[in-house]
Image (cartoon, rainbow, N blue to C red; front, top):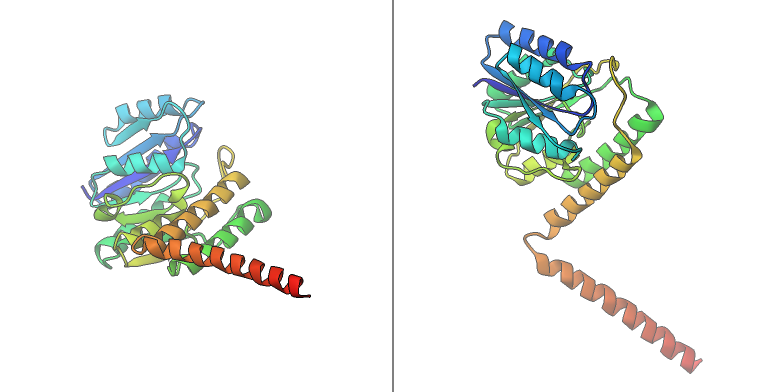
Length: 260
């Protein structure tokens, strides 16, 4: 299979028919063999009914349903397990990602031999304060910690070599850190492509400050694991030295006070 398109979603009933029609038009124009895997992350609207109807109309559309909301990372993880395409492309269901990007993203994997290509929404239509600013802060921290030169780690529009998505596991809020996970799994050729960011047409944003904070916590966890996984005793050595230093400082101050 040429390409798998994995779409995690939560309460996106309005956008799904138009999105699937657009994807189908693009892949057929390029003669790709394909599948569209839609992962319903516990939607409370009629998203699952829409997916069932679409899959009857087009056998290339497949659905996975969660009984409750587990989050985007869990949805992507299950989509990756099911994906069969040589190239796997992820995109959001809210129509802010353009399916017209699919051919070039796939070409960069197949011809340019990238392991992973991340989209960069250089021009955005999000609220600057509630989403753009937190994203810029997170991206700066992720670049510094991972040494991966990407502008938009959290962009939902990405392309992967099949081997990459079968070699990593995503949990928590780790979907923001997939390029980091891929690099640590040994996939070093990570590229970037400027992609179109479209104004939201349906629904409301699912972004919140709690997810932003969780993303930072997961990034900190990755940083810790990456630093000490091969040398765990170094961590305990640092803790020992920290405790000893404070004990020594306390003793020195105590003796100085007594002498005074």
